[in-house]
Image (cartoon, rainbow, N blue to C red):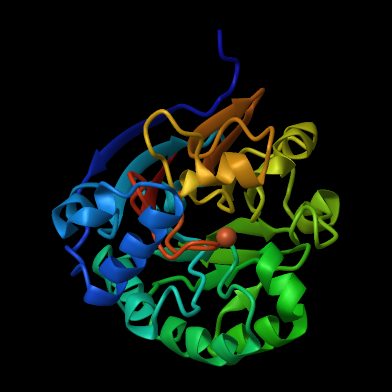
Length: 298
Ligand SMILES: [Fe+2]
């Protein structure tokens, strides 16, 4: 029996705008398929269209939070993570992600890291694309492992420059209708120095604790600190999920069992998004990119 005050319902809809399967992606897929020894797949581009996941899936979830202040009942959050602007994810790709986020008409946009992969040269452009995000109550972000390994300071500064508040073990107070809601954010669990008590120290005891965290490994710690709802990414949902083979992310991060969706520990609820970008190989297979939309309910 679950004892959490959080109750969730989820429903998926493929409302995501169809994204064109560009010839570059197709070529990269065919090269990758042959790397994986899938020579029969690389024989025809129809196989590519069948299994490659290029279309962004917008998923919708209701999250019930005990003690949610009344003005925030029905608040719509859009969650973007693991954009990975790089040679695998073009500026136009990022701009389409931003457009799809804007189409959701969000109250809040929350970003959970990995804006780039390995190169500093993509920091400025990805921030420029994110400048166009629309959100009634602001855009808040944390850093991912790639951001920290490339340059935490440069990514933070670039995001700040486009009015995105970066929460590095800090929280932001959102005011609405005479009441307030706090959004906390921690540095990345492995490469940063995540500090949940510091990130949530300003949240009044009577308020729900909402936390942005790149790496879902923080789940046990979040549960220990009575966090109500954690938004996370990092896994890419596995990125490549070829039937009867282990997913790319399971291979690169042995021991990780849960790669996407809701996870619950005590009163703590976490959502792990499949994210938007690609790393290691320039394709996603049977693992569509995702933009989750959350509706907070009291
Ligand atoms: Fe990532």
